[in-house]
Length: 222
Image (tube, rainbow, N blue to C red; front, side, top):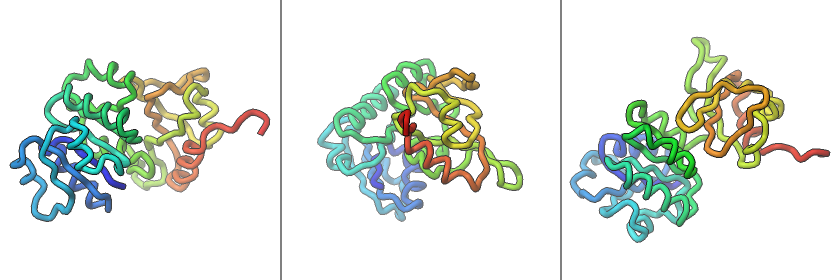
């Protein structure tokens, strides 16, 4: 996958190196050309000098071929504008924005942009939002047999009950992150757009659970 990152500070450079190590092609955008020094000599991706929400700059970074976009500059407004441009103008499927003000999280989530607040940011969290399928577990027991994982789901599950998602996958939904807050599911709780679904499962079942979530609900009568 090709991934574009806006911001080459400590967060952006660490994210770029981690993604490239996983075998992805990466382009990093920053207004300050000296910031690219943080990438190190071993970084083989693109270095694009410019404003991260400028469409020509994004095209130079390969946004039209990108499967994911991360906005991790030092400005909340720049990050959310860039994330929206990537999502709305270029149709990038996996988009995430770093924010400094957690109070803005609800607004951004309602815009359909997954956000990561600085106070709880880790490279692992950002990676899971950009690469939701096959992500590393959030937690696992000492034997590694039982895991807590954030699993991506098909848009068709939005508006359907969490219990139906559990029935289809055979997994237990431990909690849902909604508008930046953790929520324990009730029997009648439905999936809302922007929800992050966290599932407790056996490690050996992860592939099957991901497939069930990605497939979407079966139509009645089928």
